[in-house]
View 1 (cartoon, rainbow, N blue to C red):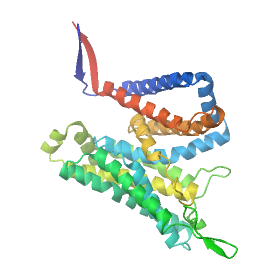
View 2 (tube, rainbow, N blue to C red):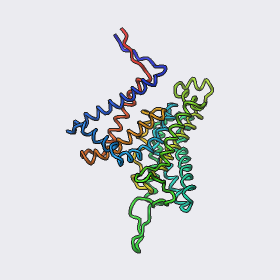
View 3 (cartoon, one colour):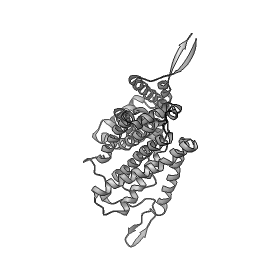
Length: 358
């Protein structure tokens, strides 16, 4: 008797959903063991997380706030993942969009909101796309691994960003007759650039609308357009794509324009809707967390909404873990990493089937 691994032609939608649910369940069970190792009751911990994130109006609103950038970024990531192009640098593209929007907001402070805000989103999209396209070129023309280049581009831009906070963008503040710049943060952008919020919450509804539209549009692009067909062919069989005359360079470049652009728009939403200025801690890991939800949601807009809403709740619940149970701040990162590990491990079952032969 021996185990035989065979490549699947196509996994049914029901089986795909079951595998992804099983991967999350395996991650939750693993983290339950970690909580137990800390001497905590896992049922009590999970109950606290879900009650705080989903059981109160404030918790639900904050969960949606966290969901917004995740949904925008993961919609673009899921699209390029279809072509087997692994964009791990959405965090940098997110930052590129935010930095470009900051330049627009501080350069045109008197522009009315109905002109300034759309301009910021447009420039943020272009900046995110511009920061992602060179990695697609290096992959297509020089065969450079995109996991390395997309990740390294993030570090490059982060160092540039940190330099700006210590130099040209550092806020000058006046107290009495004394002007100083002792703290590493930028000025607050003009209120004309602030996004409107749902009353009583921090939910910036224009970016929420853009995120939902992006998830639906990405699904339609992949499933109903010629470009979507080319994405799928390149991802499933690059050799067949070349034989059919499909340009790998064009497919991954256009894919990265969309993926990087959506990440850039998420950065605009974070700046204009939530933080309103830059600090050294502006980046909070949305670009990395969205990798998890892109895998979980696939190209299904409902799946992306559910996956990002749940992960947004876990991020909110992570703050509760630190306060209530005095767990280290890195615990939520471990939580997210565990989910990603099991999602990627269980992905094997979607591509291959295991049979027992005698």
